[in-house]
Length: 69
Image 1: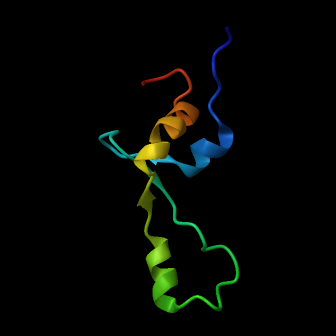
Image 2 (image 1 turned 135 degrees about the vertical axis):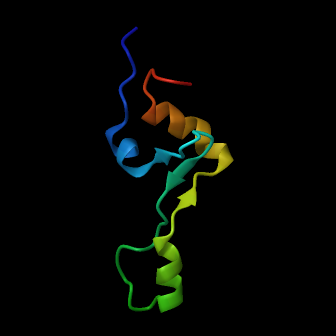
């Protein structure tokens, strides 16, 4: 069976933390239609978030293609 390739879209969007226990991601809703969103809301969207525990296994499979498990 051939090796699994890293998902190009996922490797640009997700990054494991330094300890490797969680996966960081950017917040959504910060690309367009920004004039109706408050200044405070847009400021809070600058900070990153962590991938939900239910999705973490799937994301790791996409970004670690055959590497560490």
